Each structure stands twice: as structure tokens, then as C-alpha cells.
Image 1 (cartoon, rainbow, N blue to C red):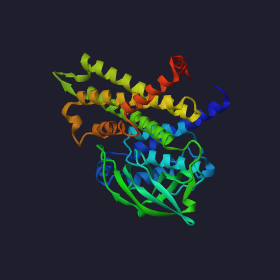
Image 2: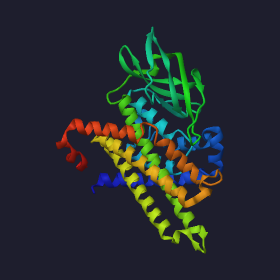
Image 3: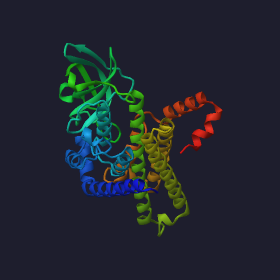
Image 4: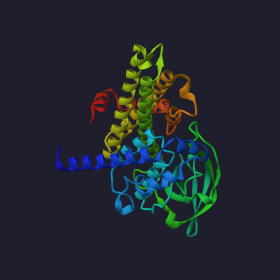
Length: 361
């Protein structure tokens, strides 16, 4: 390992230690229960924003911390493990879009769109622009200050930063009680300083790809938490005069669970490195989303089997992890959608490309 690699490793280790300590100290059962009603934790967001975690992968010249995408992934994994009820991923993606297009990143929590098949239209009106359209299931829209969107104009794809106070928001939520809101942009007028032509590499495909990557990393963290809870419970709960963790059937299921978690973490973090290096990124992200989604299915099933009835109660911590696993696996494309894309891509590349793709670093 050269000096540069050693330095990056040391910096990331300090970053991970700081994030681990912060989320462990700040996130607790009372906060998570309150967030189910409020939709998020404003107090946690303030602390995380002060630590510059949401913009850690953005360059310092654009107002970020000057880290890498892998640094961000390391933090997102820890946030996922703690079920942090904040738009960390969404703000990071919004910051990436704005910084890439030379637009100023506003303070506060941000969100993004479109995440589905919606089309937003942007038309010139003198020295202003007028944005119109509707967006479904926007993460944390009611909590964010701005939404950063991709829209269609006569000049091609553009990126726009919109004050959400000027939009009509209809609240919604996912299984984990996280906000997934409907946003109506009814001819919202924007100053030219809030609009820019989409830079190369910033489009719906890459936004969806990065979103899928971040959800994969979040799921990896949530899987680690679910495994931790299952192992602890098996070591505490007694049945027929023995700890249930001493039964071979339980041990086998926990071992299988651990294997699923290890595979999910490896796939997600490897994909972050691939996107960072722009090396086989599409294949790596598709593989990560498929693998973490499969692990979420198997892992949540095993975790609840080990816990029995207590695992589905609001009073117990497990549901904060598993409800997010079931929700996140569907966002930015589920495993079926990514499997189809991956299959089509490999068929188009031809048989000779299969092994080099699988064996690539």
C-alpha cells in the first residue's frame, strides 16, 4: 500500500469512528419513535449537517468536505445501521447534482426528483424559467428546504433547485414511516441562477444508479443491525431450559444470516468504489442492488423467525431495521428491475464479455 492509499485509509477510519460515535450517541428508541410521527428528526439533522456528513463527497470549492464517494458510503452504511431518520442520502445526491452543474448548494436538508417515470417541463420566460410537473413518492419532501430536479427544456436536460415552500406537498410515507410525498410544481418561476444545463454524467440514468447504490449501502447497514439484534436475542432468550442460541437449528440460521450480511456489505461497498473510479459502475451497482435486496429478504425473514412474536412489536428495535429493508429494496429499482437490466446489458455485450466483466477489479 502506498502513502496516498495509507492516508486515505487513515482518514476514512477516523471518519467512520466519528460517525459511529455520533449516531450511537444521538439515535435512540425515543427519537425513532418520535420520527415515525414527525417524519424525521430535525435535531439529528442539525448535528449531522454540522459534521458535514451529507456533503462529505462534494469538493471543498463547492461547499463540501472534499471527501470521496467511498467516504460517503461508509457514513451512509452507519446511518443505515442506526435507522437514522434524516435525508442524508437525498441531500448527498442533491449536492452531487448541484455541484456537478456549478450551482450553489443551499443549506438545510435537500431532496431530489424525479425518481420514477415523471417528466418535468422547464420553459424560458424572459430572464426566468417556469417549471411544471408532478412528482410521486419524493423522499422527505415535507422536511426538506429545496428539491433538486432534472427537467426537460428546449435546450436539453437541465438541473434546477426549487424552494419547496413554493410547491404543493401532499404527505405520504413508506412502510418504515419515512416521508414519501407527492410534490406538485404548478408553474414555479425560477431565477436563472437556480437553473443550469445538466453536466455530462448527470442524467436520469446516473441519478437512479447513484440512488440505487446509496439504498444498497443503507440496506447493508440495516442488515448488520438486524443480525446484531438476532444474535443478542438468541443469547438471552431461554426455551426448554436452554438459551435458544444453543439449538443447532438457530445456529444454522444465524450463520446463514451472517453470510447474507457479509455478501451484501461486500457488494455495496465494492460498488461504491466502482462508481468512484468510473470502472464497470453500471454492472457493480446493479449487482449490489440485486444482492442487498435478496439479503434483505432472507435476513429479515431469519431475524423475525429468531425473535418470534416480540420482533413485530413497536416496543422492540428490530422493526426499525426490517421495515426499512422492505421499503428500501423497492426504491431506485427493485431486484427484478435491476436483474432485467443486467441481463439485457450482458446479452447485448455478448458471451465473450461475460467473464472479463465478472473478473474485473
